[in-house]
Length: 435
Image (tube, rainbow, N blue to C red; front, side, top):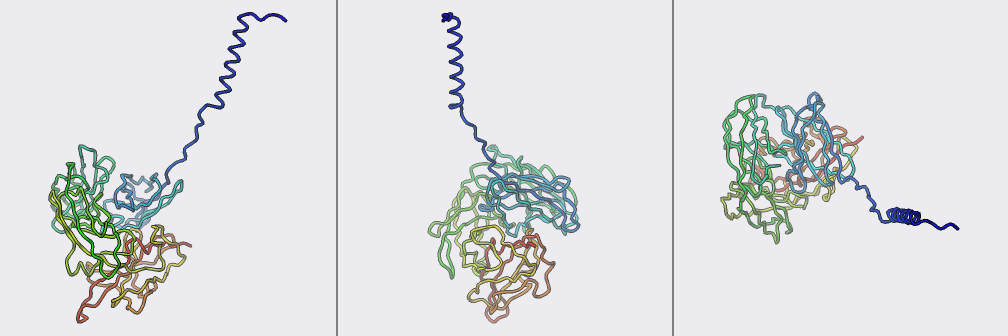
């Protein structure tokens, strides 16, 4: 056998070494596993409820339904009225603003939540109703902060009796639509900061621009108190501070009671309206207590303030309704449902109302600032068919989501007047009509 040369041996050795390295690489090379998307998709179309035309430029905000706070997700509808968000799984609700249209959902009506699931697409189209203020102006500006805490901030323009509001977008910009002509104080609200106050003089059908606000970090006020439970068992409930005029929850100003006591920290200076039990827990604010004692307002000025108030047992709705643990509306296949609930003690009669997903009153409920009942059901009865009195504003529609609520009223002494004593919960009675 011929002897291998020295150079040949080196070549063979290198070949074996490289082969071995490549073989090892197969076994020790890190394996890259694709990471699945961690979100679901929300999409839909914004249209005019009167003519079904697409609405371009509507400002759309997404809120966390569990905390009632803005998520910072913001978009505007395109020329075809379309919008789309990618959201992590969870419970949300939507708010939509546009000049010439009522807000969706109105600020005094709890929004109907929805659930985003992983890798699923949820279609949620929104109909907007033409505003009855035909010559309203609008206020625009920017909210700035040295800490960058200016996304999803509530901005309110108010005079002594009325308030108009919006939310800041991802750049800190805001637009408050449909504001009657007049002079307003404009201020931003949220946990942990105080806001400058600007003035805005609004004229009809005109933009009042550059109404800018500056946030100062370090708001350190607090509100504490105890919750009394009337005619019901004691549990721990959520408590939130809301704007004194609009009634909207202030982002970040909420807490859960411990031993029926609560403390909300990082409260800015101002006057607030305290509210309890936004979530489904079998309790509601006691309307009779409010009638006797007044609304639970509290004023904070850089220190600690105290506000006690009461809740009572909610009326239990039984059909149709979502489960208390879920914000997903139950599906029904009739446009003339019968609403049923459990009897509530000491009731003289009930009032039932039905609202669509935009907060529009469809049937029943109240008029004249809660002073006039549009319909009543005797206390001996715990069910009623939709539009049984023939006074519904419109028929229920297939494919639409609604919420119904029931209120209990009690005749006052002498029977000449009445007081509300309870209601079903904000986030119960959700249903969608399918084919």
